Amino acid sequence: MSKYVNSDISENIMHIKLDRAHKKNALTEDMYLELKNLINKASQNKKVKVILISGGEDFTAGNDIRDFIENPPKDKNSPVFKFMIALTECPLPIISAVSGFAVGIGTTMLLHCDLVYASKNSLFMMPFINLGLVPEFASSLLLQKRTGYLKAAEMLMLGEKFDAKTALEYRLINQICEESELSNIALNSAKKLSAKPRELLITTKALIRRESETIKGRIELEADHFIEQLGNPETIEILTRLNKK
Image (cartoon, rainbow, N blue to C red; front, side, top):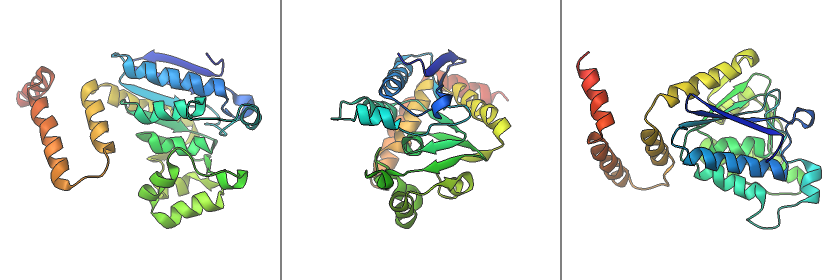
């Protein structure tokens, strides 16, 4: 367990907060392992419907450089990769509330979240090339899908900082918020999701994130889920209640 990652569960929401403010929430091996464990626990906990990740004054400055040098990832079983897989494979909706620095993995992990809110003071950066490294967390693939090739090349080849306005333009975030309102806006969305049926959230996320296929194939897959869900007692109850209005 890492003393720099806090969590609690309330109203079907797992709140995960990075709490290493003196290092701008730079991530260590222990923190990656704790994040991985929390995400997996939330996925397996039937009472949890949504995960909300925040960092306080700063979201995260990325990898802690000293920890990275002392404990470099040696293979795909390293803590950072375990965290990446846990986040990528998490079936539940994940919301991130970003303030201050979101550097390196602090930006690339947002590509695997479902809703992202950022304060006006947010600064994003993927400086891998400046560190003698290459893009990670599938950012070389996902950024192109979000922004198109030219903007993806700009972000990954120049490795420069960009602000919340640019992040919104590049479709990396959903909304820019006043810093004082960020937590409430993100929590409000989490509460809205937590009021939905858990299995439908999981199925809808899986459908949205499914790999490319023909339109006909997607229609058929959606139809299978749609028809199955129509026989679900919870769905019947919802439709019956709406029909009485």
